[in-house]
Amino acid sequence: CLKHWADKSRQYIESISRSEKPFFLYLPLTSPHTPILPSKEWLNASKIGTYGDFLMETDWVVGSVLATLDRLKIADNTMVVFTSDNGGPGYIGIDDINSPHRGWKITMFEGGIRVPLFVKWPAEIAAGTILKTPVAHIDMMPTLAAAAGAALPTDVVIDGVDLLPLALGGATQEGGDSWNRETLFWQN
Image 1 (tube, rainbow, N blue to C red):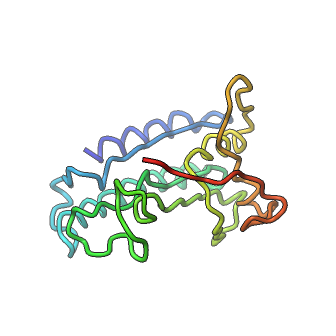
Image 2: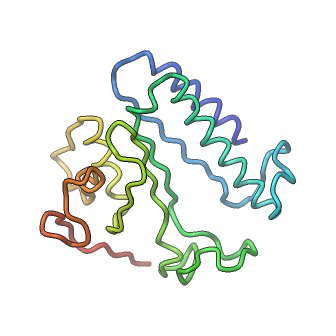
Protein backbone atom coordinates (compact mmCIF):
# COMPACT_ATOMS: atom_id res chain seq x y z
CA CYS A 1 0.00 0.00 0.00
CA LEU A 2 1.41 3.36 -1.04
CA LYS A 3 -0.03 5.03 2.06
CA HIS A 4 2.17 2.78 4.22
CA TRP A 5 5.33 4.01 2.44
CA ALA A 6 4.18 7.62 2.67
CA ASP A 7 3.60 7.21 6.43
CA LYS A 8 6.99 5.55 6.97
CA SER A 9 8.75 8.24 4.95
CA ARG A 10 7.11 11.07 6.86
CA GLN A 11 7.95 9.38 10.19
CA TYR A 12 11.59 9.01 9.17
CA ILE A 13 11.84 12.65 8.07
CA GLU A 14 10.26 13.83 11.33
CA SER A 15 12.67 11.72 13.40
CA ILE A 16 15.79 12.82 11.53
CA SER A 17 14.84 16.47 11.04
CA ARG A 18 15.95 17.37 14.55
CA SER A 19 19.53 16.68 13.52
CA GLU A 20 21.66 19.17 11.65
CA LYS A 21 23.27 16.33 9.65
CA PRO A 22 22.29 15.56 6.07
CA PHE A 23 19.88 12.66 5.70
CA PHE A 24 19.02 10.31 2.88
CA LEU A 25 15.60 8.86 2.15
CA TYR A 26 15.15 6.49 -0.77
CA LEU A 27 11.49 6.03 -1.59
CA PRO A 28 11.26 3.70 -4.60
CA LEU A 29 7.56 3.68 -5.34
CA THR A 30 6.56 0.79 -7.54
CA SER A 31 3.60 2.80 -8.78
CA PRO A 32 2.51 3.29 -11.44
CA HIS A 33 4.14 -0.03 -12.30
CA THR A 34 2.14 -3.20 -12.81
CA PRO A 35 0.25 -4.60 -11.13
CA ILE A 36 -1.86 -1.46 -11.34
CA LEU A 37 -3.56 -1.55 -7.96
CA PRO A 38 -4.57 1.81 -6.56
CA SER A 39 -5.83 1.80 -2.99
CA LYS A 40 -9.60 1.68 -2.51
CA GLU A 41 -9.61 5.37 -1.59
CA TRP A 42 -8.26 6.21 -5.06
CA LEU A 43 -10.47 4.01 -7.24
CA ASN A 44 -12.42 6.07 -9.78
CA ALA A 45 -10.52 9.21 -8.79
CA SER A 46 -9.45 9.98 -12.35
CA LYS A 47 -11.13 10.22 -15.71
CA ILE A 48 -8.68 7.86 -17.43
CA GLY A 49 -9.27 4.69 -15.46
CA THR A 50 -7.31 2.62 -12.99
CA TYR A 51 -3.92 3.72 -14.33
CA GLY A 52 -4.91 7.35 -13.76
CA ASP A 53 -6.14 6.47 -10.27
CA PHE A 54 -2.73 4.95 -9.50
CA LEU A 55 -0.97 8.05 -10.85
CA MET A 56 -3.10 10.27 -8.65
CA GLU A 57 -2.27 8.16 -5.60
CA THR A 58 1.43 8.36 -6.48
CA ASP A 59 1.12 12.12 -6.76
CA TRP A 60 -0.51 12.23 -3.33
CA VAL A 61 2.37 10.22 -1.79
CA VAL A 62 5.00 12.54 -3.24
CA GLY A 63 2.98 15.59 -2.22
CA SER A 64 2.61 14.36 1.35
CA VAL A 65 6.38 13.88 1.67
CA LEU A 66 7.03 17.36 0.25
CA ALA A 67 4.42 18.82 2.62
CA THR A 68 6.27 17.24 5.55
CA LEU A 69 9.50 18.93 4.46
CA ASP A 70 7.62 22.24 4.23
CA ARG A 71 5.93 21.81 7.61
CA LEU A 72 9.28 21.07 9.28
CA LYS A 73 10.82 24.08 7.53
CA ILE A 74 13.58 22.02 5.94
CA ALA A 75 12.31 22.02 2.33
CA ASP A 76 14.58 24.84 1.14
CA ASN A 77 17.75 23.02 2.12
CA THR A 78 16.61 19.52 1.12
CA MET A 79 17.38 18.10 -2.32
CA VAL A 80 14.48 16.06 -3.68
CA VAL A 81 15.03 13.92 -6.78
CA PHE A 82 12.12 12.45 -8.72
CA THR A 83 12.82 10.12 -11.62
CA SER A 84 11.94 6.78 -13.17
CA ASP A 85 13.92 3.74 -14.21
CA ASN A 86 12.43 3.40 -17.70
CA GLY A 87 9.96 4.85 -20.14
CA GLY A 88 6.23 4.27 -19.87
CA PRO A 89 4.87 0.78 -20.59
CA GLY A 90 3.37 0.10 -23.98
CA TYR A 91 0.98 -2.53 -22.65
CA ILE A 92 -1.44 -0.41 -20.60
CA GLY A 93 -3.57 0.88 -23.44
CA ILE A 94 -2.50 4.54 -23.51
CA ASP A 95 -1.60 5.48 -27.08
CA ASP A 96 1.68 7.32 -27.57
CA ILE A 97 2.54 7.10 -23.86
CA ASN A 98 6.11 8.18 -24.60
CA SER A 99 5.37 10.58 -27.43
CA PRO A 100 7.25 12.07 -29.20
CA HIS A 101 9.72 9.24 -28.60
CA ARG A 102 9.54 5.84 -30.26
CA GLY A 103 9.25 2.75 -28.09
CA TRP A 104 8.42 2.04 -24.47
CA LYS A 105 9.67 0.20 -21.42
CA ILE A 106 11.83 -2.83 -22.26
CA THR A 107 13.01 -1.31 -25.56
CA MET A 108 16.27 0.45 -26.30
CA PHE A 109 14.45 3.21 -28.19
CA GLU A 110 14.20 6.69 -26.69
CA GLY A 111 10.72 5.88 -25.33
CA GLY A 112 12.23 3.09 -23.29
CA ILE A 113 15.32 4.77 -21.88
CA ARG A 114 14.54 8.50 -21.77
CA VAL A 115 12.93 9.39 -18.46
CA PRO A 116 12.16 12.56 -16.53
CA LEU A 117 14.56 13.76 -13.87
CA PHE A 118 13.28 16.48 -11.57
CA VAL A 119 15.48 17.98 -8.88
CA LYS A 120 14.11 20.39 -6.29
CA TRP A 121 16.57 22.16 -4.00
CA PRO A 122 15.32 25.71 -3.48
CA ALA A 123 18.35 26.95 -1.53
CA GLU A 124 20.71 25.98 -4.36
CA ILE A 125 18.95 25.40 -7.69
CA ALA A 126 16.85 28.16 -9.21
CA ALA A 127 13.24 27.20 -9.83
CA GLY A 128 12.51 26.68 -13.51
CA THR A 129 16.05 25.63 -14.40
CA ILE A 130 15.91 23.38 -17.48
CA LEU A 131 18.90 21.41 -18.73
CA LYS A 132 19.01 19.54 -22.02
CA THR A 133 22.32 17.84 -21.38
CA PRO A 134 21.92 14.04 -21.32
CA VAL A 135 22.60 12.55 -17.90
CA ALA A 136 22.04 9.09 -16.44
CA HIS A 137 21.12 7.36 -13.21
CA ILE A 138 24.79 6.56 -12.65
CA ASP A 139 25.17 10.28 -11.94
CA MET A 140 22.90 10.21 -8.90
CA MET A 141 25.40 8.84 -6.40
CA PRO A 142 28.18 11.37 -7.17
CA THR A 143 25.63 14.19 -7.26
CA LEU A 144 24.02 13.29 -3.93
CA ALA A 145 27.43 12.78 -2.33
CA ALA A 146 28.53 16.24 -3.52
CA ALA A 147 25.32 17.82 -2.22
CA ALA A 148 25.88 16.24 1.20
CA GLY A 149 29.59 17.11 1.25
CA ALA A 150 30.55 13.41 1.33
CA ALA A 151 33.67 12.04 -0.32
CA LEU A 152 33.36 9.45 -3.03
CA PRO A 153 35.03 6.08 -2.42
CA THR A 154 38.53 5.89 -3.88
CA ASP A 155 38.81 2.11 -4.08
CA VAL A 156 36.27 1.66 -6.91
CA VAL A 157 35.68 3.28 -10.28
CA ILE A 158 32.70 5.63 -10.24
CA ASP A 159 31.12 5.84 -13.70
CA GLY A 160 28.76 8.70 -12.87
CA VAL A 161 29.58 12.38 -12.61
CA ASP A 162 28.42 15.10 -10.25
CA LEU A 163 25.59 17.00 -11.94
CA LEU A 164 25.65 19.96 -9.55
CA PRO A 165 27.96 22.07 -11.75
CA LEU A 166 25.35 21.78 -14.52
CA ALA A 167 22.38 22.42 -12.26
CA LEU A 168 24.05 25.38 -10.57
CA GLY A 169 25.11 26.94 -13.86
CA GLY A 170 28.85 26.49 -13.37
CA ALA A 171 29.39 24.18 -16.35
CA THR A 172 28.72 24.61 -20.02
CA GLN A 173 25.89 22.51 -21.38
CA GLU A 174 25.51 20.72 -24.69
CA GLY A 175 29.09 19.47 -24.99
CA GLY A 176 30.81 22.72 -24.07
CA ASP A 177 34.44 22.79 -22.99
CA SER A 178 33.80 22.68 -19.25
CA TRP A 179 31.35 19.74 -19.30
CA ASN A 180 33.41 16.63 -19.72
CA ARG A 181 31.77 13.23 -19.92
CA GLU A 182 32.21 10.18 -22.03
CA THR A 183 29.39 9.10 -24.31
CA LEU A 184 26.37 7.52 -22.64
CA PHE A 185 25.26 4.22 -24.16
CA TRP A 186 22.89 1.37 -23.40
CA GLN A 187 22.90 -2.24 -24.47
CA ASN A 188 20.49 -5.10 -24.17
